[in-house]
Image (cartoon, rainbow, N blue to C red; front, top):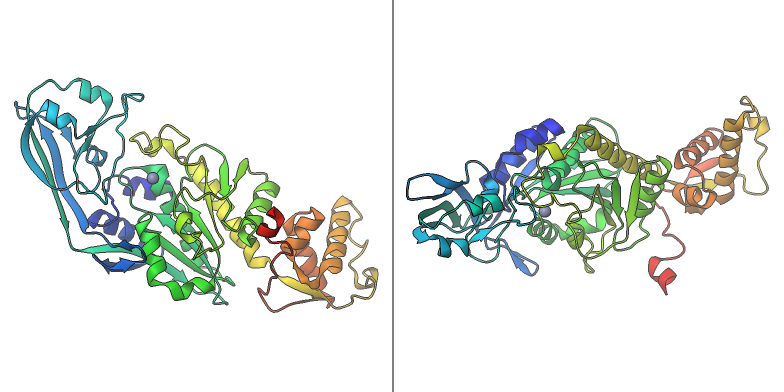
Length: 435
Ligand code: ZN
């Protein structure tokens, strides 16, 4: 994952254009990806697919012919989506188009101007302080023309049409945690799942932030009812603890699965309630869509100084943190895959477990005690109305213990799975709990 990030780091991405396509083609070499091209001007709900932006070069040159700000040294130097410019101007006029971070004098900020035709340069505060008054040649060799919005989709059919969607935004230029870490974890999850059997179908979306999610939802509305769970992945490589942000529903199966998993797998973590600010969960959890889509990150965006600056670089993301994030995602998915609802076939009083070799037979240690207790919980609550996750929460045991108990009972003919994934809604909805 870190190597993929290293390869993608230099590319100048945006919400459209060649850098985005090049990124998606690279992801396509990790996992099977289909690229979709949506023409400029396409109406997507309240939005319109914008013109395609491409850039070849940009610089500010002083009167001695030296490039004092140079896109070739960092693509963050140009305000993303800047319109073409080729003019001479004095420093005072140039300054109205310059952006710095006075508090972090060595870092270059990241700025965009997607929906307002404008241009600008970003530079370090130190660079700015060294600029004397002069006549500068300002060049942005960009194009803003009708073209396409590109997104990548990897669909992995499972036994069921019910889908789990995973989305990662891929519209930021050279930034590693915001953007590339989510892309890398999602790409390798897709690669991993593509070679293994799974019950759910998986749909991985590699999309430009906001407009990409809106575009996908507008053009694929008929697929929305099949989406059972979803996860937005971003900011997964920094050294902070894992943060799971609940869906708008607040108590969706994925919210409960993530909370249980992070607690029981002893990850250093924090749970966040939904808010309508953040990444593409804003679109997936808009009221008319209202999908059970949560978000997994490490340190939340905007709460670390490196966010949206040149300091979100290769040194800011760590292979072992990417690996831990990847494992957490996989475990959440594994829990969802195994969370069935069962029926106790011997529900009048307890079945005789000892006769079936299920009780007091194995060693008699504390492990056996856990196994037996888990079986009693599964038998007691498997009335067709409680999923294994419900039983896990009610018993305060680990999902793996409850799942293993269900398997053992099934093998002895004491339990039958109800129609796959007919998992009942929890008895109390979030809204009702609130009121
Ligand atoms: Zn961002």
